[in-house]
Length: 189
Image 1 (cartoon, rainbow, N blue to C red):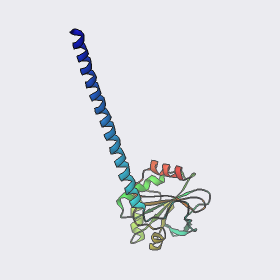
Image 2: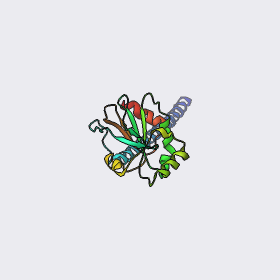
Image 3: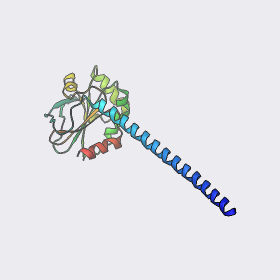
Image 4: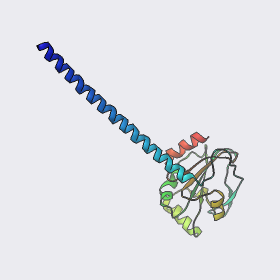
């Protein structure tokens, strides 16, 4: 009789362990499914934000442009020796306010960084934005409505990565950290 009771107890413990194990499996599956749903939603949002931008598959080449900088001198958009990260911003854009300094942290020996102001009323508005954010003003250029149209800018901030031949190889819209920009540059270079 003792042997029989021991077996019942053993079977009972095995059933409890299987229940705990299947509960853990369900928890892991549920967590994995939630992560997949989150990633799918995130990718859908990114796709939606970038839907109107120029494609970054290497099929679009940007001709050389000359822009006016904050000091009134003309300056080229691209650098033929290295890739160029073009950061389009608007002085009224709060996301731009929080993220513009992230591009200043990129290594200038590896990438040419250019910040193009759009959607502003006057030069003073851009100067005030630059002063408040403390961003490097030496690479700030003044864009026009024509610039926004040509680069298909419909949201701020918008970023294009252009290789040394003038081909668009990367793009993004919205806030990006310094690390995020470095990753984008690494995957497009």
